[in-house]
Every structure is written in C-alpha cells, then in structure tokens.
Length: 344
Image 1: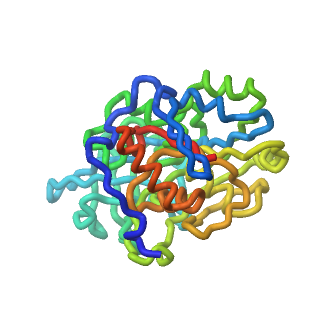
Image 2 (image 1 turned 90 degrees about the horizontal axis):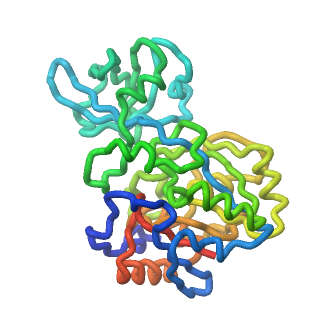
Image 3 (image 1 turned 30 degrees about the vertical axis):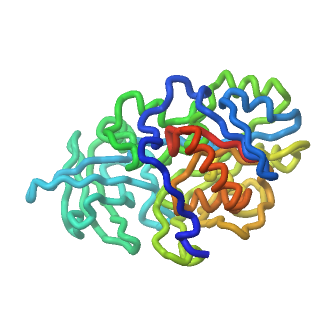
C-alpha cells in the first residue's frame, strides 16, 4: 500500500481550534459497515447501544509535558515534549527526588544538541544526554521536590500542532476525558472527549457495561508516517494496561464490544484479552483481522495518518472516504476538538 492512497483534502477552516461549549453536543456521523450514513448529535449515541453491550474506555490522563526551555549561553528557546518510553533509562520518575530521566521530542530539534543545557522555571534544569535514533532526545533533569508536582507548575497542556494557538487555562480540563484517571499521556484519547458523566450514567442505566483500560498516548499515536510504503512504517511503543475486571468484562460480553478511540483498539488487539501490561507497537492498517472490536467510536483523523489507516482497516477505505467527504460537505469539525464518528 502507498501512503498517498490515504490522502484527502480538508478545508483548513474545518479544523476545530476550540472545543464546543458542551461535550456531548458535538455532531455524530454514524457509519454502518454496509455504507449507510446517518447524522446525529453525540448525546443521541444511546439510541445505538443495547443491553449486554460493553463500552471500553481509555482512562489515561494527559499530563502537562510540554515545556519551554532556555539555553542560558545562546539565549535560544526550545520546546520539549516529554513522553514515557520502554527504554530502560527512560521511565516515569514517580517520587524520585532531584533527578529524573525522560525521553522527549524537541522543536527546533537542531538546537537541542547533545551536551546542551536548558533552564526551566522553578529551578529546573535539563541536559541533553543523547540524541536517539528517530530524532528524540534523552533529557537528564535536575530539580528540587517532586517532578510531577513541578510539571503541574511549569508544564503546558500539549495541544497538537494543528491547533494554531497557545494552550489556555480551559484546555487543562477540556483536553482531558471526564474519566481520566491514570497519569502518563502526552496527548488526549480524543474520541472520549465527547462523553459527559451524565451521558455515561445514562448509558450504564440502559444495561451497557462500561469498563476501562489504559494506554498512555505517546508519539506512536500521533507522529506522521514518513515512508511511502505503508508497511515499512514502524510505530513508537506505548505503554498499556488491561486489568482483571476489564479482561473478564470484555470476554463475557453478551453483546458487542464497543471501543472508544483508536488507542483503546490498539491495546485490545495487541494480544489475548487477558490481564496484562506492557508496550505495544501494533500498527493496524487495511488487511488487519480484528479479534475483539465489534464497533468503534472515533474522531475524524488527519490524512495519511496511522489513525486513519486503522479506521480504514476496520470498515474499508472507500466507505471511510465517502463518509469523510460527506462530513466535509456538511461542515463537520475535524480532529481533536472536532466531531465524532460511530462505526457499527
């Protein structure tokens, strides 16, 4: 498959720059696997859910991992995006005092050379210890206190680059699902942004079981595909956990397993649905055989992205392209703060 096969034209003004006022008032395009399309609002999703269905959420929590560092020698500034990594030397620091090691993406990357030192607010310093394969940086931090508490003070909400504005105070809550629980993501699992607690309660009252897994969204989800041959792309690993309760609920489902977001899909399809934790670099593209997922709630995704390829694998590229073209015609809002699709 060629990367260019997964392209489409999106008018720039349809890229949502802010969330709508009420989460569940976003629009919902319902796409049946037969190709039938309906247009609803997200709160009407209950009409498509049945007793015995299982709704699977990703409860990862976005942490403010976007940092602006200043080089005291050159006076230049670099934006760093921290993320967790399976490398032995790059773990979340937890309660570690005084030193922490993180992997990061840097922009502009050429300024973050090996050996350069960067100053942050609250007396935090970091040195670029290594320039790693793939272009990421290994940062050695020095600080006083608890690193996660410092991140809350000096970090910023890591909005994606197609949102052409700085993060605002309101983004701290809106770029987070209402059920976020496990800190560790550097991007939100955006399909879940449409749910309210009230809507989840209504879904539960209809006899739908709701369960949660965790996948900490990292570069594997959002970095672009750079190889023209799709099969040559290598996903960056992301950490995931499926606990005993979730595994048993999914295996005992009397109805459909309805998955919220591509990150949840990748966690569930990585291996047998058993209590497990680890790292997944699963890349799902057309031809993939789904074992767990019966229906998918997702947002509208970027052209040529791995997320778009996953959706194409689930329902077929021609159906996806037709649905996207109709969404564009009807002025749906796209990407992270945009509208949603329900594929069933």
